[in-house]
Length: 484
Image (cartoon, rainbow, N blue to C red; front, side):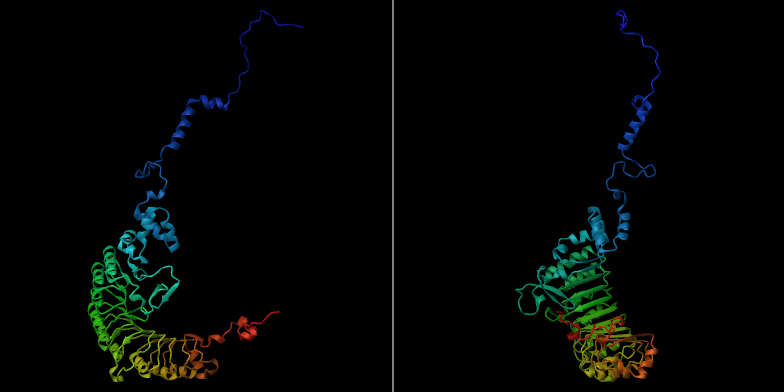
């Protein structure tokens, strides 16, 4: 056994040993150039990024990259994205800037709150409007009411405590002063207004629109009267006009020859005119025909014209479309046929939901419409074979559309359309007295020469070919069977 010596040096000199391998940690912490590179990378990641190619960009960090886009460029982008109302609503919810820009893109708006217009928020929110509908906002009615009174020209919510005088708009509409104030505000903020719908305005309110909006081209005025038409006459560039005078159950307003003459002398560029619930006579329609040389379409809806007015249509030299809608009568006393004349440029005659029970009226109407090339008769009461026979005077008809006239028979139809040598298109729908088994060989031969034919007079008896042979379409006693 050997023991270490006591005189042994406790701190012996190190003996040479093989060199140890350097570790990556030593190089990472002790290498000065590498530390500088790491520090530079950290500073670069923290410091703001700048685009050398575009020195205009902000040197500060940006959370919303769309702030780098100008308003003009972002408007062009939003215009391409706003192809639907839901998309426009989504764009408006992004931020306040997008909300304001999206408001600039909106061109058409229906207003339901009149205070929104009077407060100026409408103009601030939507500065570029050119189509505005003020009808829903002009009525004083509970929005949450379950009672809705509707007409083809107007709808209004009613309270259960409404008075039973059957003229609801007379007491449920804003005062004239309030409506005029709103029109003045709208005209001052929307000088590019082109289309407007309003009810209950006065002459002064419409004058403000005429003065501030020289580009106004289309106007619908409800609850109109002769005095109000003085304001409309100042709209020199007006092209499309709809006047609503009297509406059963809503309001009673009178438009007579006086108002129609004022209108004709002021608005000489009218192209389309619709008179709904308006009174008048030969003189009023004559004034429109002689002064409005550009008039191409004239519509009468539930009119209250005096006898003898129909002859005034001959003064409408450039009239191309004549339309009657929901008229209880045409002209009970049109006068002698030699004084009626005709519309030389007339191409289309449309009658929808009219009562054609008076032979004098129907005969005079077709006589005035002799040059017509297109006739549409839809859901007209009283149109039987004798009434329809007056259409034989229209020799140049190319298109005939018949729907919902249950009194006309196959014989009555055939007797007239054989005289139309230029007939190219025929449509007969839902006329129950026109039968397939009553078609004569001559009528069948006529069908072969047509370019377009739609023949479904009795739609209730038609079944798809896939249902033939089944119990579908039979009477209820056979179709609905009790199961046990």
